[in-house]
Image (cartoon, helix red, strand yellow):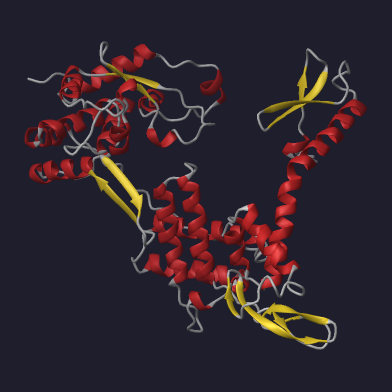
Length: 478
């Protein structure tokens, strides 16, 4: 019978300093040496002492945040705020939080501080007539007066609908995107996918906007899956889109569970909720189609085509190409793909592409004077630009896509610039091997040998790139 290994929490994993014979831990830009020095590495008692010392250090780090959380909880309780108000309170400065705490502390004794009747910085203030030994002010929305002490009102907590939680969820992932941990495309996709949940009509006729997170049960999940299946069967949704929608829905439900808003439905990860993708053929350009679009393209559009075939670049790669990534003497480009730069842990090495004479000639011709970016628009803007509008919808401008689409329409070929990447990979894979095609596409190594032992051959890659240019007839320009 196989045994399960219990993984330690990250805070319990200490590092060993061999020279000092002592345990250590790095946090906040500082290395902490824990326990006694000169001990044996496998001395359990010494390790436990070091771990106990590290726990005390962590408590010192966490003490300010714990105190702040307690203050936020107190404000949430006193104002009877809904859970969605927490993020707004946590964004306040320490001074603003302390001001609200001071306000509550002075409710029964600070008539001089808040003598006026009406709206204050923290809510509506009402002077309470003296009763016995009590006088002061209270918030009429939070307290009721009686002969003894202020009592908390019994009004029901404001309920937050599923649609409200979706809006808050999108705001949180948008914040991740602003920090560079998520792409704006991913945020926009989540917004569109969860829009199907917001618009979904339940069997009883209620919209999801009128339903609450507690309504998300195993039956709810099953019915939403069946709803997506109906859309697929009616050809209103592609199978791949339905799969992405249900995946985003699962992600959203797990976030609600992590925030302790709902209990996790038992069938959320049911393997029966599947959408089987129909295999679609890989679309590539023929050599004749490449020549046709080449003949009608402008010189700058020809540069886009050359970089798409020579290096397998997408429009984003063209837009992000930096001056420092181009060797203007040797005629090479050395870089990682733009989509992989956010993942600092990915084992993706930089790929050196030897440029065809035709590619290098046009690249020098259209090289911008900008100190960072190689290719810009006529207005010195980026080739691909995107930003999130005030309505939460992603706005994108793609100069490469528009330029190629004009040439493709004239030539009568498919207006998909990414097909150049598929064309190059297919030709290299068929002529040489799939491993070389993966290297040309700058894919992550998949096996242990590829990650740690096998160094890619630059000579083979150069030979494949040269062969590809001659195969499509674009190696040299007339």
